[in-house]
Length: 489
Ligand code: ADP
Ligand code: GLC
Image 1 (tube, rainbow, N blue to C red):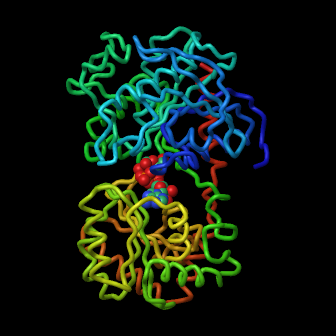
Image 2: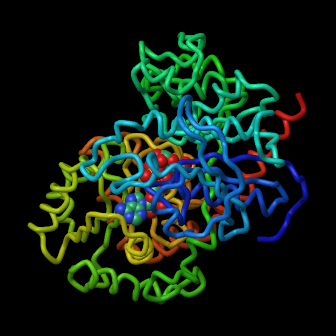
Image 3: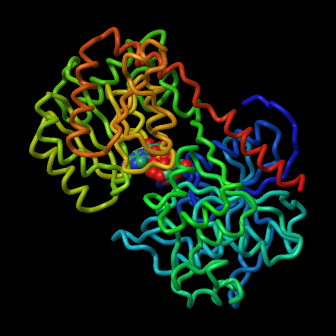
């Protein structure tokens, strides 16, 4: 990436996951791409994350840069330093008893949250706040601390009580996850009881990490303009709508970008054959390769619908499964990749089992396969109940795989429904479902399959999507503007 300007501003970006080191969802992609773009724009950005076993395995020889205070009564922890592929320096907190274990980063191998998550992510937040205050042992001191989701959301509270604290930006990637714990952890985390009140970190008798962040941060952002409005309403506010509405003056929705080099059908090492808007022949090869890989009948003409998703209530998979019997009669082929809710996993695998050759499913996490589905499918399904931003619908537009989405959050902000008006305007890129019900989903799927039969219109949809620029430049500039405004007051 070329340097587009030298600002030299020092920013500490705090996150619980970052691609390609450790990823469970879109937060990891954003944590990699946004700092990389800021770095390219001349910002002196550094990333802080926990020293998970997976990260230290990939980087076994990181340099130790300091010892920093841990949680109250606990020993100091080491801070290790490395450099990300795009040149951004990162620090990991080396605390083996908290971060080096089997299972997932938030949950154990049975899908249960780790019982000490309050302490694990309390430590992340506390170290972030330490580095952002006068007490830091490092020579480098951030001018802005940028926290992401509940795992680092206590940092603004710690910073509120610290000497020489940097201002804090709190980004909400998903309000459904708040980090709520019994009040007993308040002293273990070294938080003063003084802040355990409704105008502070208390939430219905418990401690809420995310509420702390939303209350104490100087600026709040979320990952799309529509979601910024939705979280101020009862339906999607998850109990925090009042607080968010009261802070609307400092709440900004900034649509995520995508990493155009990582997600590029013309140079994607994971896919069968490269292709571009100018030469789409490789896409047919990708479709055949995907059909073969997933055990589907090799058929060029049947519409192949793909889904890559965490299997949760949020993603609307239950509605897709409900209409599957009618959908499969259209006919179409279906491919699923995902993991999560055990019941959804079972239903998806059952569907594949009962429709051999027509439905393929893989339960697990597979980065390569996610690219192969984006490239090989004809259409991408993403009827999420709510979606703060969503990245796959943007990846799929870039891969000439028109998405079918529900009109919510970032999906609404990034997909233009195919209809006479948008086709005439020249900006139709997919299919937008106004209401998420089985009947409406089926109707929209029927409409999409009918458009698929019209080769000329379909090619227009693909081209429009492939020509859209979802790069990070504009969004990173919007973050930079917020950082700069904080430094001016
Ligand atoms: P969310 O963060 O809510 O899961 P996003 O659409 O923002 O949703 O991002 C999801 C990211 O995780 C995408 O990069 C997607 O490809 C990836 N992903 C989700 N599930 C899987 C999986 N099972 N295997 C590989 N990648 C996955
Ligand atoms: C969250 C949201 C998703 C968003 C991602 C990155 O996981 O569910 O919509 O794209 O974070 O911001």
